[in-house]
Length: 510
Image (tube, rainbow, N blue to C red; front, side):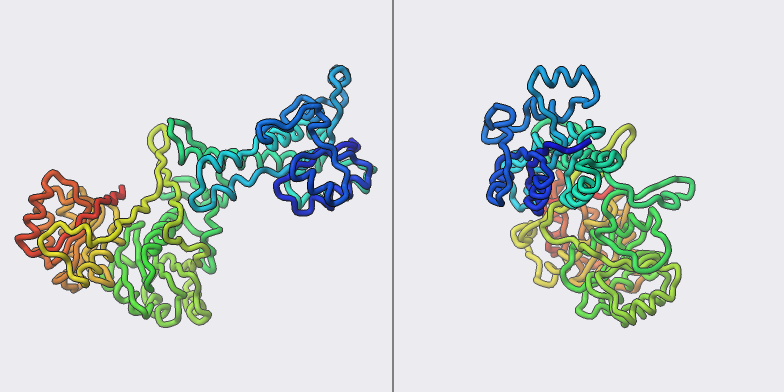
């Protein structure tokens, strides 16, 4: 199908003038709109306004300019169909053989900090996707270009084939256009879902990354979808398992809470030790000392390049995965001697105040969708509820524990000092039991809880939890508050000279 007429209307104008000039040199009539038409004329390329072609002006500030039967009829009518040709003649519809469109930058717009809903809506392209779909539906006759990278492909075929493109190329470009419009619509729907004021549906479509050997257990099938490989690079080791992927994500979320040099150890997505220190090996020792049994076969993550001293210390135990922003050459060489150990490099570490991702959970017959827990508690000094405010050391310990308890399965209790965890109790049906386990873990590790801070992911429903923490040696407590017995819990803290803070933020993790 020889291309005699092209409609060009692009947001990304890179290379479009050269492309249009090459088309014009082959005798192709060019239709265009708005800024594209202005650019082409400035470059000395004849471009006919679409409004002149349709006999109808652009209206509503350019919202309606290509939505016209002469445009879509010129794209959609079947060239070899006698009835279609007769209808085209009757209504003065001329063929459009090539459509070159890339869409308004909606995704770039919503990526801007503080973008307003009205600003985003104005960047929803209507005419562009409509033309792409019309041209793509009729790919037997019409060539559609949505990506500037395909300009040369089209020109080369036209030069070699007397102004025509091959069916194979038209088909490939049509599929590419449908994928583009689908992704574009999905980005709009996802954004509006987040901003929604009315009930609506949820949709998601993610590319397949890999088929996994199996799921959570060997009898379950599983696959990985999305852009995981944009966040992590595997440097060494076996294929990642379903459970590895869950643990890596949990580890990355936890380490993002800390700006000081920090090492965290996780098992089954639960932290079993976290430590901070200017020397990474010392941070490791603090984390490992919390619990020397659970880390076997666990996940280790640090937020600084992993050097040889910590590599030597880590290599003394068996680990499934070690994650770091970078590995020193000698450290990597040492760790790669372990064939079953996976080494992962973080490519896009989480940044403070970045937009929370969506958290998806399957339920019987449906899907739960929520924002990931990224709540901040603000100034801790304004949230003291006891007679005695915390000391500077206690405040640091409370904040350390609070960063960790957010990532522990509920019911969750963490005892901490200013730079390390001392005891962690996770996933218990009773908060008192979680506290008992945390105390027992500290005792097993030979760690004293005297002068520690206790962090609870949800409120203490009764004074007994606070009392147990004080008896274990805690002198400060941080919790959301909100129990009907808050006054009793505060009174219990005052009786034992425990400084307590109510954050007003709960961190349940089911």
